[in-house]
Every structure is written in C-alpha cells, then in structure tokens.
Amino acid sequence: MPTVLRCPHCGKSLQVPEQATGKSVRCPHPGCNKVIKVADLEIPQTVGAAGTTRSVTLGASPKASAPAGKSDTHALGLDQTPTPPPGSGDLTQSACPACKAVLLSGAIACMDCGYMLQPDTGAEPEHRPTLCPNPACGVANAPQDRNCQRCGSPLPTAPGTVLHGRYRVERQLAVGGFGAVYLATDLKDGNRLVAIKDMICADAQEFNIRVNFFRREAEILRSLQNLPIVPRVFDFIQQGQTAHLVLEYIRGRDLFQIMEKNGNKPFPLDLVVEWGKSVCDVLAFMHSQSPPLVHRDLKPDNLMLLEDQRHIQMIDFGTARDVGRSKRSRLAAKTRVFTEGYAPPEQIMGKPEPRSDLFALASTMYHLATGKAPGGVATARELAVQLADSAGPIPADYRWLFELIRTNLAEDVNARYCSAKEFKADLEKKQLTLEVECPNCQATNKVREPYCCQCAEALTDPTPPCHHCGQINRMGSRWCIHCGNRLVIGH
Image: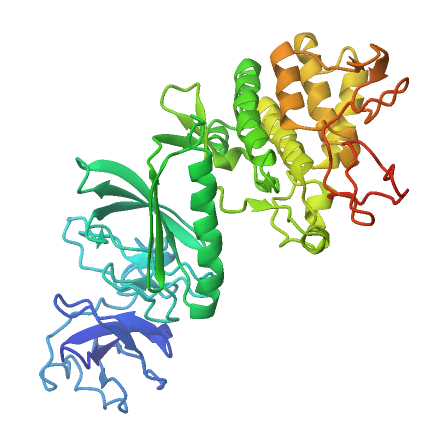
C-alpha cells in the first residue's frame, strides 16, 4: 500500500510503496525529479478499511491517521494524490520501462532500479532513464546525470549531449563494465555518423592504467588502416578523467547476434571460408609486428556482417597486446583475457602467443559453420570422431575445412599451423597441406617440421629468442638446437 510523503526539494507530495523503506526513489513532479532517500522509519499501513490515507514527511515520525474517509494531505499543504482502493487489481503485473522488472498495479516506483513511474498519458517519455552499468547497483538515473545517484559510478552519456564541441550523441549502441559505445553525429564533418567508445572509470588511479590500453587500441587500429576489414579511426580525445575513441560507424550486426536470431542456423560454408581469409590478413599483419601483437579475443561477437550480407569487419581490438620485447616480459604471465571455448590452454594460463589467435579463429569458424558453440580442445576430439566416419554429418566437399579447423584446435601449440599466412594459404587452396618440399635439397618433409630431414634447412618462421640462451629457433621446435633447453609453450 502506498504512503504519501513530502519531497524535501519541491515540497510536493508523492506516494511511496511500503516496501521502499531504506531505498531511493525519484520525485515524479516536473521540474524536480530529484532522487530521495526514504527514511528508515516504520511505514504504517497507508490505506485503511474506509479508504483513509496517512501522510508522512521524510525524516519525521508518522502522523496520526486522518478521520475516516479523509486524507491529511490537505492539512499539510500537499497536493491531493488519490490512492487505489484495496484489492483493486493489485495482482496485475507490468514491466518497469527502465530495467524491465515486474511491477504491481498501482506502483509509482520500481523497487529494483528506483525509476519513478510517470502517469499514463499515452505519450512516450522524451528520453529513457540511464541504468547504472555497475552490476552491483543497476539503479535508473535521469538522462542528464553523469554519475549514479546511488553508487556514484560514471554513467553512459545521454542522447543529445555534444562531446568536445563536435560529436552529438544520438543513442547508445552497447555498454559494459569498462565502457560504452554510442552512435554520434560529427557536426563538423557534414553530419557524418561515427561510433564513439567512451571509457567509463570512476577511480582516478584505475583510469590512468586503462587509458594507456585505450590509447594502445587506437594505435593498433591506425596501423591496420590499409585493411578494409578494420574500421577507420578518426579521433582519440582525452580530457581530464574522460577518454573517447571516435571510429567509423559500421552498419550491421555481429555474427553472434545474427545466429541467435536465426535459431543458431549456420552460415554458408563458402562465406565462412571467405571470412576466415579476411581475418587471416589482419592476424598476419598483427603477428608480423616486433614484438608480435596478439588479438586474444577473436569470436563471432567481434565480427560485424555488413549490409551487403557478404563482407565483414572486425571490431574491438581493446584486448590486443604484444608478447613482450624482453626476456622478463615474455616470461611474465599476461592478464588472463579470454572467452571460454575460443581460447587455447596457453592463453588461459596467461601466456598467449600468435598461434593462440589461430586457435580462436578455428573456434570461430567452427561456430559459424555449424551453429554450435565451440568447446575448446574438446571440439577437436569431436571433429576427429566425425571425420573418421565417412557417413558422418560433415559434407564430403568440405572435409578439408573441418580437418583444418581440427588441426588448429590442437592442445599442443606446435601441432597447429605456424602462421596466419599458412592458414590462409590452405583456405585459398581448399585443401589441407600435409607435406612440403625443402627449397634447398627438394626433399619431402612433413608439414610444420622446423628443419629439413635431409639437409637441416630451416623450413618454418623464426621463434622468439630462447629464454635460456637467447638464440633463435624455428616454429615447431620443442627444444633449443643451441643449448638443448625445452622451449616454453607461448614463447
């Protein structure tokens, strides 16, 4: 049952459900909309048998009830607010327009997020409230608020806000614990639509750490600007405790969303092959840097299907890191960033390397080709069983593709392809390469053997230096040929 309280800001009355003790609500009156902390007082039953209403001033003791059939709101100088009679549809449920929590009939505030419900005028609200991204809070705030009224966390930017005197926010595209992405209009460049990544961080010390990673993402994207699969970077702006990355706006949806909407229906295998080749171009460039850059979070969620329904673009390079220049940095465990099912064992242990991205690419292609979420190395074992059955579900014309995927889902990093270039070459040839010819003596060797079995000519790309003697070996080597030290996986 509601209790009539007086707003300490505007002095007008508002009704608060009896379950609101100790919680925050927002004043519904135009021109106020302030967040109010309901005092921790024993809220009496507000509607009696004769329909009487009790009124309580915030922070004060409850007043005695008015005579039967009357309300004491008039005596307090407050606006008369009618209350529904008991039993009039209390069990009818509706959803909060802010957080979608279930509401009872007659509720004037959401008990989950604190959003004050407006009278039903038939008109849509001008702007939806902003939900706090803090998972421990989630309260609804006014669109103009920049910090959560309950926990103080920074809030996503409201539509209509002009950032840096140039970019007008149109709507929010995505939000997470570390930031939000908006669709915005560049007012100084012909009203061009852009995507803006906003780094959200309340702690000043933590902000200084995150902003370096944010700036690094901008640098990585700029280095990939010649690849059509990567969105362009227009601007990186840091002012005080805010940082924004302005990117090309990509019209489309990510591949994971599309699969979910279509009941996990797989994509055509020819398209999956073409997308795999495009991703290989990006990985080959990243892995060729000194030191190599590792993406660390390749998955369908980070691949956008464009409006032509054929081409894709990669998004979200925020997790990309280099493997380290020094012996100490190469041996040190990296922050454990990974998505379960797409990450290989060495990355889960905090020691990613370029071939970790090949594992993620194979997992991604498996998901797109089958509609089934990958299970890491367990998927490789499942594929081995299916490939051994000539009457199994794998199409005969594409056995090579699933063999390629199985190979790169190997638990042993040395059993995978050595590079993204090798991965793309087999995608282009539509076959699984098993043997290679030595360029020096023309002897036939098993693919990915580091040295020729006849003349010891190097057959694969060089590895980072051995952490014991500092000498270079070749991809696929398990022991250093110079000092005999076992080469550590991931280095």
